[in-house]
Structure formats: C-alpha cells, structure tokens
Length: 269
Image (cartoon, rainbow, N blue to C red; front, side, top):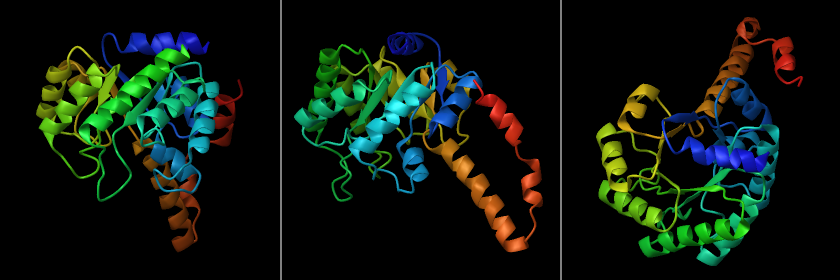
C-alpha cells in the first residue's frame, strides 16, 4: 500500500495542480482524505502545538513517530515536514532521512534553515550538500519517497529572490524532485521561480487568501500546501469558544459546532 502511495505521489507531481492540506494528527489526516484530497502533508508547527510545544522544538524521535502514525492513518500519500532533517552536517542528514523514509511516508521535505537566529540559513554550498545527501539516502533506501527541497529565506527574514532562485536551482541539480520557497506571496516572484527551475514542480504555501487554486494552477504551480494554517483555524475556534465561555458564562457558542455523532460516523471505519 505504501509503495502504491509513493508512486501515486510522484504521479501527482507530473501534471496538473493539486492541493495538499496539512493535518496535524491522524484524525485530521483521515478527515482530509474523506473530504477528497489526493495527498496530505504533516506540519511541523501543527504537530508541535498539538503536543504543547512551539514550532521547531520536537525531537527527531517524536517526528519519526508522528510520521509513522500519520502514514498509517490514511491510504493517500503523506508528505513529511522534516524541517532541517534534525541535523547540520550532510552525513547526519543522510542517516536521518533514511530513518524518515522508512516510516511509510510518500515524500519528505528538507530545508536550509539552521534554527540559529543570528545565522538562520546554512551556507550555500553546505545547503546543497545536504540535499545531495538526502537524495543519496533516499536512493539507497529503495523507498523512492519524493524529495522536496526548501529554502527558508522568506520565512527567516532574508527575503532575497535572486538568492532564493539560486538555491532552488542548485537543489534541483542536487537531486530534489520538488522545490519550495515558503513565505512568498507575490505572484510575479512565483512565476520567476517556476521559470528558473522548470521543468521541476514547485510547491506554493498558501496561509492566507493571496491567491486561489485556479490562479496558481493557471500559472503552472503543481502543488499547493497550507502549512500550519488549518491548525491555526482549529486553535482559533477553540480559543474563541473557550474564551467566550470563560468571559460570559454562556455556552451558546457551542450550539453551532459539528455533532459528536457526525464525527463518530466519520471515524467508524
């Protein structure tokens, strides 16, 4: 089943455009599958919040366990947000990517962020070496999981389009199957990225309404993800309802939500 899902994930990147929402636990993964999405991706932030941690603070062991649970929950492909592969040097990246590739996921992403505020991106050549190591590890594993390479300049406060493009091009040459620069919301910039890395597919993160599926599809974007946005929707609803109860003493806010019977039926099979 997992091999079939991996093949399907590669097929999804070949033509057209698909939306890959980001669940944060097995229940939300199963729900998105029921709603008809062709693939899902984990979210590092959504997972971290669900276990009372800030983003980028889960351990490698927690991430691997999460990937295993998420992949087992659905029959559709699961892409794993593997952050910076929980490693700095390329050899350690290879070891950790091998472990992640064996959890049942259909794809994973490796980013060039260091986690250090004063030096947030790995140096260019080292970042490329890390992607090359991830590629080699996947090939050696025989899992054929799809490798997405991410550059995080726009996320960490270094929004340089030329540098972003240079990194993505180099990541593609190092063996990435899909390229991703989260944080970019300018459609012209996205077009420039796609032109530079073509024919490799590009993932676009949509965390607010700056574009529609039809607009991005018409531009040639292959994959759209939502990151932690849907988790934030859920947390916003819970925070709002609980705050209303605490401040007003009324439980009327609970009257409009989905019923327990409805949710039981969704997860009965």
